[in-house]
Image (cartoon, rainbow, N blue to C red; front, side):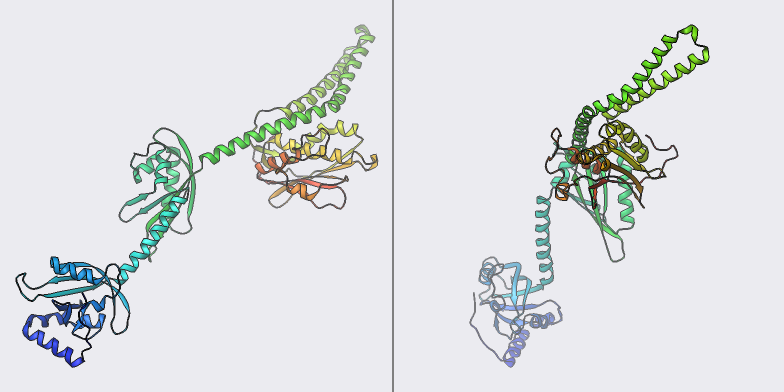
Length: 513
């Protein structure tokens, strides 16, 4: 409860302090204490205070103690005083106000009755410990902790906070779920975390963390696998950043763990779907190529039949061994030519997946030019080429890469179909850059709308009567899966389109074709 407000003079305050010390000689000892101390009467009025109290809370005595705590945070002083009178003491934090400057501060207040219970007139003693800085830090830490916990809940990543000095670690519920799978009852510790990392990846992950702790700088990131107690293998990405002291010694490590299993499975399904789409497109292309290929195949078959008929007409008795050998050589040559035509077609339309190997784009381009030569002849179209004199080596699936080349060339055939025969010219160019290689097809047709080219893959579009509407979109996807780009080059007349792939150093064994 508040006592009566008084405005004493400095001489009155000094007189009150002097009288109190004469009646209680031990009170003179409190002047030497660095902690604010004060003596109160049974009305809650300050009678005696030490210099530390007067410096940190101000005012002149006698002064109602409640005047120093006008705020209601965290509780009002009237409640504190009542509790102290009932049970004889109180301890807690209160917000105070300096009576001279009005400055607010937080103090831990210890208030107790310092006279026997049987005494008629009680007196009380109070000790105050400044805690303003500590409370601010706790408030800031509480706000940060709340934001941190909210971020953990919103994020799909697991969080690890590793106190290196005290060998303590906090694992968020998401981190534990990634490591434990369905078994959420298993406690997760640093040892369990290490155990859950696949044995083939464990040394690599440990080495990465040790290197980062030895030289904490930029955050590290490493992809690896973990095995749950049920035996399920999950793909994860671990990112981490060490916190170091002023001397550069790391004392804390904050890590995030992201489960990428679904993403990897989606990428695998996408690659499978891409292969199936490429197979459908190759089948469609093979059907369209059948007429022109049959024309080319008829030539060696007709030659074989002619040579055989000639030999039969002349008869074995009229031909010497040298003539028979020459005739058989001609038949063999034409048979091999026909077999090569069939081999190229069978290889082109085969469905089985081919791993990426070192290939020479020039060699692939020559095979495609030979494959499409009969169709170019039927369409009265000239195929010209300017291939780079040196090998253009890259890592690729040769079948898929040839699929893209065929798509680009057959689009060029369609683009020049309506032109006069003298203008039906298609030019194939390969060239090397600093780190990339280019395959380019040029024609003098109507060109491609840049807007349509920019939206490839977003919708299926075609201008062909019998087209599937996915040739260029599929080509773009194939090239992107090879870390390259499908490029539409500026052209004054017609279309200049191709792809760019990263150049690879040629291996000692040479590229595969």
